Length: 218
Image 1: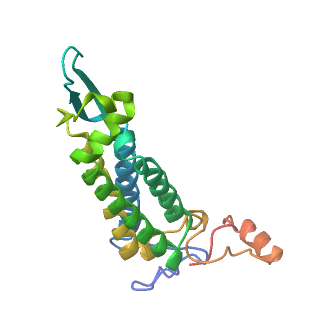
Image 2 (image 1 turned 180 degrees about the horizontal axis):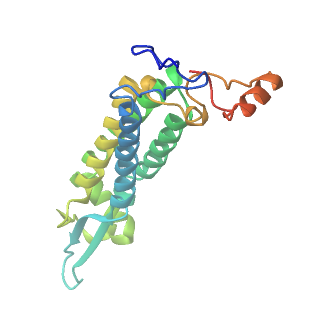
């Protein structure tokens, strides 16, 4: 009786498959995509929150015996376009998620433009003339020239910072967005079509061998 010959290689199983190894850094575009979206949403959300807060106060000191009066002016009154710009920025972020390629780059550029407009609008809205005009709309136009003071907490700075964050997300999208996964790509199987695509006989053959006919060929 002859024993096994040393050195003979044992043939691998016919249906043995080595699982593919993901290349290093393969998940970086997805993480970058998620981080950019988070920054953009946070920026637009912070801006929408900030415009609802008081940005400045105007004090009127009319001639005696009329009493002095004070009115708080919110970001909605000083920057009425900020709400529309913030909602447009959120819509641009939705377009970034739903698009790919050149369309995503255009969406990123639009988001960057909207973010810059938000920042400029917030920074210029707290000028004396704007605060005085908004305060006069409260029915105090006959009380004389107001004394203007900014609110204790600089909400207008928060709104401007939110716009800059949205702009940064837009710039990063325009620069790197074409490398990020598209919305539908996460539902696609990597490595090509399934082995049984268009061939029922192949599917039964794979099932007979104990395999999965829905797994694509390597």
